[in-house]
Structure formats: structure tokens, C-alpha cells
Image 1 (cartoon, helix red, strand yellow):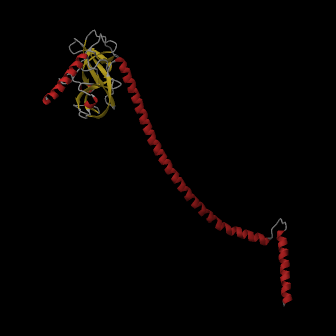
Image 2: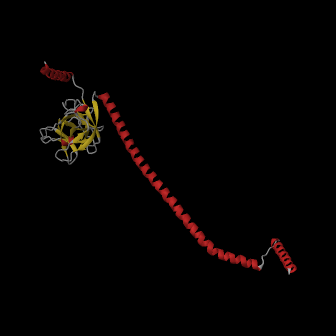
Image 3: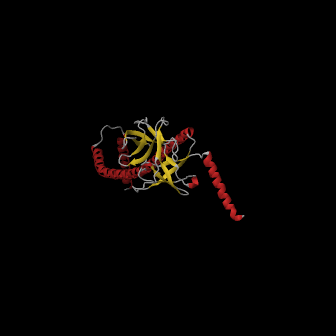
Length: 305
């Protein structure tokens, strides 16, 4: 029995070695058992591989979608920041251009007239159609007094009608009414024809949006396209402030004088900042002011003596 087992083991080993040699040898064609096993395994594998690949792709898509969502959120945040910064930049650019324009204006005015221009912001406008006023953020603390003229780079706006410590009220030229006794008329002339042309801006027509210049002499050289400015004969309004442009001229109601329609130079419905014109005191006014201050000082000292 022991020799028989040894013999069978030897036969099995020889067969195993023979099979190994046969399988390791170079072959062009597989045997039918090998082909059968290979096809069977491939057929079964496809039913496992496809679902596994589908689920693997699904998880990959979910992860990719999460990454895309995070990236979109970052892009939205960056876009919002860009829009905010661009708006701030545009606002600062416009503000800088506006301030540079006003600086050029004041520098140019200094060479023409010895006026001081106090910069002010418009903080409110009265909605009352019968009493339109404008409020500024400067007052007596900044040297503002009543009857000071208010202007923009483009032209005349109005005059200071009431002053508070930190604010002031402006009566605009749109409130001019020749029938109202408390509203000031504006002596006016034509730029370049100061010695020949003269009239009064007395009324504002709300329907046409134009000023009416009256009491113009028949031989006055004023014509369409001329630039009307404040006259040097004015007592309240300093000389040389642009009022507007002549649109038309016609004979007055009684035929003795002419009237002209003036398009205001300032954009009165879009005011954001203005200038208050401070005119230097004359020698007489300066002496009167000094005397008044000395009188107040002496009156204050008297009770203590």
C-alpha cells in the first residue's frame, strides 16, 4: 500500500509538471476548455463591472458637482465684490472729476474777480411748489450771511435768504416773481457788452423753464445766443455771475422797452453741490463793520466798569 501511494504521487507529479510545461510553452491557440473558462468569466464579469462603474461614476459626478457649486459660490462672491468696487470706483471717479471741474472754476474766477467761493453741499430741497427753497450744509459758522449769491460751475442758482449756525436756506431764481415785493430782481447785462446792454431779470416762467428779462432799451444790442450775466450795478448780486443764454427777444407790453427770454445756465433740478460767493468788503463797509465791532466790545465792557 505504501508503494502504491508513492507511485500515484509520482504519477501525479509527472502529470503536473507535464501540464505546467504545456501551459508555459508558446501557443498560438487556446484549448477549448481555456476558451470556455475565459468566455464564461468575461460574461460574468461584465454584469459586475458595469454596475460598479456606474456607481463609481455617480459618486464622482456628485463630488464634481459639489466642487462646481463651491466654485460658483466663490465666483458669485468675487463678482459681487467686483460690482461693488466698480460702483465705488465710478462714484469716486465722477466725484473727482466734479471736484476738479469746480477747482478749475474757482481758480479761473479768482483771476477775473476777487471773490471767495465757499463750497457747500445741497442737503435738502423743499417740495412745496409755492415756496421752493434749497438747504445747504454751511451757515454762519462758515461765514455765510444773508443775500450772499449761490452759484454752480454753470451759472447762478439764487441767493441766501436765511442763515442758521450750521446751515442756510437758498431762494432759487425759479422763485423770481415781478409781482412779489419781497423777491429781489437781478440787474443783468450781456457778457462783452456790459457798457451797452442792461435789463432786469424779474420773473421765472415755470411752464417754459425760462427767465424773463425786462426793461431792455430799444437800441440795446442784446440778441439771441448772448450770455447774460449779473451787472456791476447790482447791489446784492456780484458782477460777472453767469445767468443764462438769450433764447428770444421781443417788444414789451407797452412798446416802450423790449423783453427777452433767458435759458438758465445752471441745472436747477440736479443740484448736488454749489458755491456761495463771498464778496470782499469795500473800504467803507470794512470801516463800518470795524466800528460796529468796537461798539459791541465797548458795550460789553461797560457793565463791568
